[in-house]
Amino acid sequence: MTTLYDFTPDAADGTPHPLSRYRGKVVLVVNTASKCGFTPQYEGLEALWRRHREAGLVVLGFPCNQFGAQEPGDAAEIARFCSLTYDVSFPVLAKIDVNGPGADPLYVHLKAEKPGFLGTEGIKWNFTKFLVGRDGRAIGRYAPKAKPESLEGDILAALAVRDGVNGEGI
Image 1 (spheres, rainbow, N blue to C red):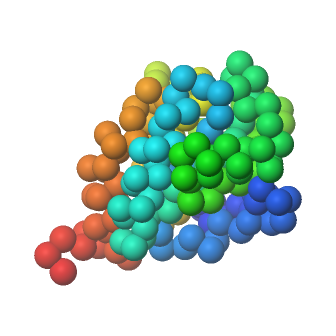
Image 2 (tube, rainbow, N blue to C red; image 1 turned 90 degrees about the vertical axis):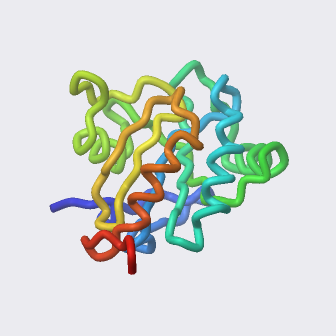
């Protein structure tokens, strides 16, 4: 069975970034853009990351320029924007495509594992979010308009699960 841990996208600097390094963590995967109406969600994503990273949450940003050309910058420009504008400290990886023949294999997998509304697989816009459990399997898919803070309950529930056992009361 394929999981998140089987993929190795590129880091922003072009080096391999094996997702196996996040084994046992809860991962929120987000396709991002710097010039989108949803861009202020960087603030909420960063807040989730800071609040729950010690408990095992990882937020991964994947810049994407497929929707309205809203991520035109190169890796250095994207990193500078994220850092200076939203004080982003979670990993923002290399720019990718999330749809079409050039879609990153991770997104091909996530879309198949957690189809969208009415079973559609395509990503509709920037800031679509996938929540991946500690076992590396997608457990939630959220529309771009879903604010990061609205995912907190699902994130807390996923963080409570350890080794396939609900960690409440432990």
